[in-house]
Image 1 (cartoon, rainbow, N blue to C red):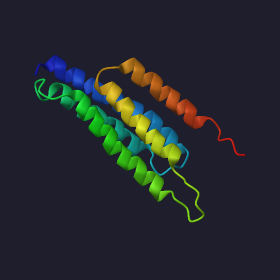
Image 2 (image 1 turned 135 degrees about the vertical axis):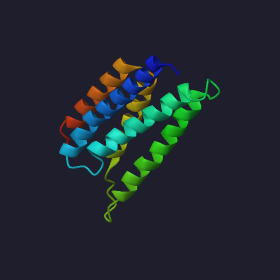
Image 3 (image 1 turned 120 degrees about the vertical axis):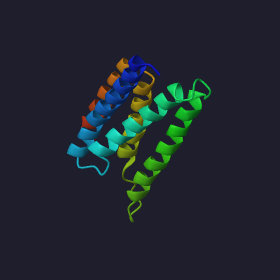
Length: 137
Protein backbone atom coordinates (compact mmCIF):
# COMPACT_ATOMS: atom_id res chain seq x y z
CA UNK A 1 0.00 0.00 0.00
CA UNK A 2 1.50 3.33 -1.06
CA UNK A 3 2.09 6.22 1.29
CA UNK A 4 -0.31 8.31 -0.79
CA UNK A 5 -3.11 5.79 -0.33
CA UNK A 6 -2.42 5.57 3.39
CA UNK A 7 -2.63 9.36 3.66
CA UNK A 8 -5.94 9.30 1.77
CA UNK A 9 -7.26 6.70 4.23
CA UNK A 10 -6.12 8.80 7.19
CA UNK A 11 -7.85 11.84 5.64
CA UNK A 12 -11.10 9.89 5.30
CA UNK A 13 -10.90 8.83 8.94
CA UNK A 14 -10.14 12.36 10.13
CA UNK A 15 -13.05 13.77 8.13
CA UNK A 16 -15.37 11.14 9.63
CA UNK A 17 -14.17 11.93 13.15
CA UNK A 18 -14.56 15.68 12.65
CA UNK A 19 -18.07 15.37 11.23
CA UNK A 20 -19.09 12.94 13.96
CA UNK A 21 -17.76 15.48 16.46
CA UNK A 22 -20.03 18.14 14.97
CA UNK A 23 -23.13 16.04 15.52
CA UNK A 24 -21.91 14.78 18.88
CA UNK A 25 -21.17 18.29 20.12
CA UNK A 26 -24.78 19.28 19.53
CA UNK A 27 -26.02 16.16 21.37
CA UNK A 28 -23.61 16.85 24.24
CA UNK A 29 -24.79 20.47 24.52
CA UNK A 30 -28.39 19.22 24.59
CA UNK A 31 -27.51 16.98 27.55
CA UNK A 32 -28.20 13.71 25.77
CA UNK A 33 -26.59 10.44 26.90
CA UNK A 34 -24.90 9.79 23.55
CA UNK A 35 -22.73 12.86 23.08
CA UNK A 36 -19.43 13.97 21.63
CA UNK A 37 -17.28 10.90 22.22
CA UNK A 38 -19.99 8.44 21.23
CA UNK A 39 -20.69 10.15 17.91
CA UNK A 40 -16.99 10.52 17.09
CA UNK A 41 -16.45 6.83 17.75
CA UNK A 42 -19.48 5.82 15.67
CA UNK A 43 -18.39 7.90 12.66
CA UNK A 44 -14.76 6.81 13.03
CA UNK A 45 -15.64 3.13 13.40
CA UNK A 46 -17.98 3.21 10.42
CA UNK A 47 -15.33 4.91 8.30
CA UNK A 48 -12.65 2.46 9.42
CA UNK A 49 -14.78 -0.58 8.58
CA UNK A 50 -15.43 1.02 5.22
CA UNK A 51 -11.80 1.75 4.31
CA UNK A 52 -10.69 -1.67 5.52
CA UNK A 53 -13.34 -3.31 3.33
CA UNK A 54 -12.24 -1.18 0.35
CA UNK A 55 -8.46 -1.45 0.68
CA UNK A 56 -7.61 -4.12 3.23
CA UNK A 57 -8.49 -7.31 1.39
CA UNK A 58 -7.15 -6.71 -2.10
CA UNK A 59 -10.59 -6.42 -3.68
CA UNK A 60 -11.62 -9.84 -2.34
CA UNK A 61 -14.47 -8.52 -0.18
CA UNK A 62 -17.76 -6.95 -1.24
CA UNK A 63 -17.74 -3.53 0.48
CA UNK A 64 -21.54 -3.36 0.42
CA UNK A 65 -21.66 -6.36 2.76
CA UNK A 66 -19.46 -4.54 5.24
CA UNK A 67 -21.72 -1.48 5.01
CA UNK A 68 -24.72 -3.69 5.71
CA UNK A 69 -22.93 -5.07 8.76
CA UNK A 70 -22.27 -1.57 10.04
CA UNK A 71 -25.95 -0.69 9.65
CA UNK A 72 -26.94 -3.82 11.58
CA UNK A 73 -24.52 -3.08 14.39
CA UNK A 74 -25.67 0.51 14.65
CA UNK A 75 -29.25 -0.76 14.82
CA UNK A 76 -28.35 -2.59 18.02
CA UNK A 77 -26.84 0.58 19.50
CA UNK A 78 -29.92 2.60 18.59
CA UNK A 79 -32.24 -0.04 20.02
CA UNK A 80 -30.26 0.06 23.25
CA UNK A 81 -30.66 3.83 23.46
CA UNK A 82 -34.41 3.56 22.88
CA UNK A 83 -34.82 0.63 25.27
CA UNK A 84 -32.95 2.51 27.98
CA UNK A 85 -35.26 5.46 27.41
CA UNK A 86 -38.49 3.51 27.94
CA UNK A 87 -40.54 5.06 30.72
CA UNK A 88 -42.91 3.32 33.13
CA UNK A 89 -45.78 5.47 31.84
CA UNK A 90 -45.30 4.08 28.32
CA UNK A 91 -43.50 7.10 26.85
CA UNK A 92 -40.62 6.31 24.54
CA UNK A 93 -37.53 8.45 24.90
CA UNK A 94 -34.30 8.45 22.90
CA UNK A 95 -35.65 8.20 19.35
CA UNK A 96 -33.85 11.33 18.20
CA UNK A 97 -30.59 10.24 19.80
CA UNK A 98 -30.94 6.81 18.16
CA UNK A 99 -31.56 8.53 14.82
CA UNK A 100 -28.50 10.75 15.32
CA UNK A 101 -26.41 7.63 15.96
CA UNK A 102 -27.81 6.04 12.80
CA UNK A 103 -27.13 9.06 10.58
CA UNK A 104 -23.66 9.54 12.11
CA UNK A 105 -22.78 6.00 11.03
CA UNK A 106 -23.96 6.87 7.52
CA UNK A 107 -21.79 10.00 7.59
CA UNK A 108 -18.83 7.83 8.59
CA UNK A 109 -19.56 5.41 5.72
CA UNK A 110 -19.75 8.32 3.26
CA UNK A 111 -16.45 9.74 4.49
CA UNK A 112 -14.93 6.26 4.37
CA UNK A 113 -15.64 5.92 0.65
CA UNK A 114 -14.38 9.46 -0.03
CA UNK A 115 -17.75 11.21 -0.47
CA UNK A 116 -16.54 14.24 1.48
CA UNK A 117 -19.05 16.77 0.20
CA UNK A 118 -22.00 14.45 0.79
CA UNK A 119 -20.77 13.63 4.29
CA UNK A 120 -20.27 17.32 5.09
CA UNK A 121 -23.70 18.37 3.81
CA UNK A 122 -25.48 15.56 5.66
CA UNK A 123 -23.61 16.37 8.87
CA UNK A 124 -24.61 20.03 8.55
CA UNK A 125 -28.24 19.10 7.83
CA UNK A 126 -28.24 16.74 10.80
CA UNK A 127 -27.04 19.44 13.17
CA UNK A 128 -29.58 21.85 11.71
CA UNK A 129 -32.41 19.38 12.29
CA UNK A 130 -31.21 18.71 15.84
CA UNK A 131 -31.18 22.40 16.78
CA UNK A 132 -34.71 23.03 15.51
CA UNK A 133 -36.85 23.51 18.63
CA UNK A 134 -39.12 20.62 19.51
CA UNK A 135 -42.77 21.37 18.85
CA UNK A 136 -44.91 20.41 21.83
CA UNK A 137 -48.56 19.78 21.30
